[in-house]
Length: 125
Image (cartoon, rainbow, N blue to C red; front, side, top):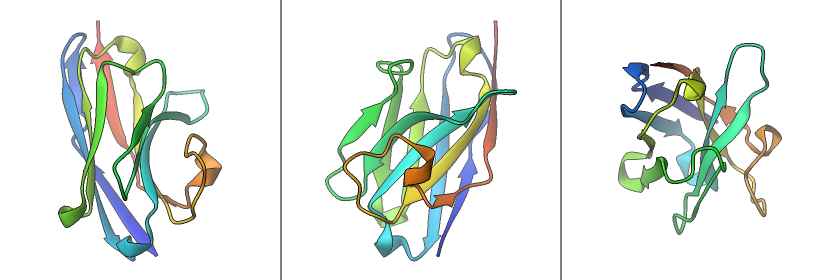
């Protein structure tokens, strides 16, 4: 089992920045990739970014490319999401996720088997 705890959400004005953190514990040696997803009210949970635990390759949703950066610190078993140039449409609950199965890609919720509790990000115009 892997446990995930997010932190760093909050409220910010458009154009501002926030940094989300996700600390993993438990069987972290089983992790292949970690990702961030977000869910706005009335919408499905959507992919934001992912990073391979070994090698560190990353991928992003088109809507956040150039503004968000995902990174990891293997020594701390943590993953981060630096969010810059935030827009009101970035408002959502952000979830950290971990995948303990090898996949060709990690864009979909069913490719991850561990989830954090979520952290609210609110961007005002």
